[in-house]
Image (cartoon, rainbow, N blue to C red; front, side, top):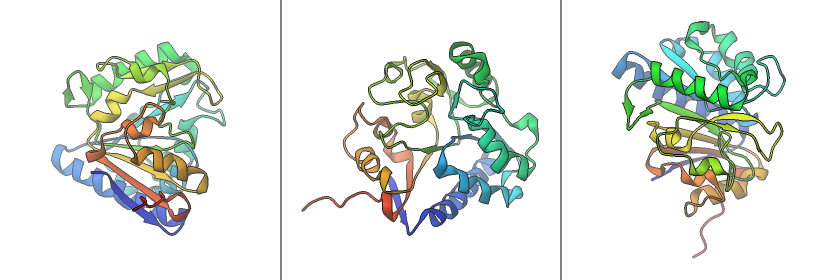
Length: 240
């Protein structure tokens, strides 16, 4: 069952999420000596990253991956890597060799292929041909998309063995992107979805309703899913 937490505002969401991430990564390090986390871009995770950076000891032994990336250079203002670098990676002093960015400048197909190879080479265990990440941190779009998996997109029909996918027709600019597959998100030990603001309330409702291709977030594994929202994005109560 999905674990849902509602906080009073966006700052409280960020604080709760930072604590949750630190705990999960700490547990993974105790069990395996290393923790693998995939990050997302967007406004909701940004403050969470800033809070995590203030406690660099929580990030020792952590390997950083990405859930998706725009096909831009790492210095571009739209780059998810740039957001993470400025708010978390550089302030916390995570060694560059432990940061595995998606090379969006390679384009969607080559970038996806290279990232899949990197994940399979570095992340263990691999189950059913898929790398098992300890935690994936996700935002959610107003349309219910997560990573760069959009409603009714062909990427939702990718083979179960697909690790990374190239996207050429994103409904949000830029159109070309790289994304982890739905299968990899579902294989992760945990997914953490953050949502703030009333513009996300409908998406959160759809995510917690019946699974549907119209809301890719609803296709995540419920028993491995934690959702943290503020009051404005809180789902509507079920009518009696």
